[in-house]
Amino acid sequence: MAADPPPEPPQALAPGLAAQFEQIRRQFVAGLPRREREIDDAPDAQALHAALHRLAGAAGGFGYPALGEFARQAMQACAAGDADRPTAALARLKAEMRRLAEP
Image 1 (cartoon, helix red, strand yellow):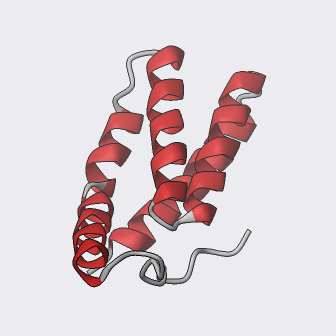
Image 2 (cartoon, one colour):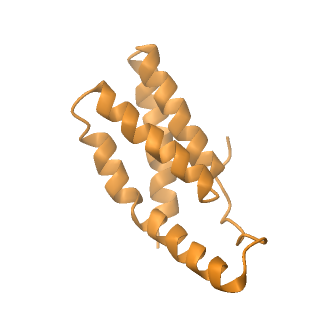
Image 3 (cartoon, one colour):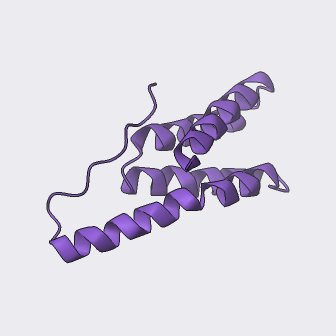
């Protein structure tokens, strides 16, 4: 899956709301390093699943479908119990998170 291009501003929002949404979207991107630490520091599989689930949902809502898909793939890989799949899926997810969070 290709990385997400920068999202377009929502067309259906009034100018003032579009600006507010864009500010929230920037906050989401700025919070990706914190979310990565949450994933890395998850004390157990349940906490990891919850962190990935929250990220998957938020990513799509903010216009980053590839990031959301990477998070869903990581969730599925962790649930599968295969030691290699989660490592690769989490690596793809983290690479995309870092790419988006770059200044």
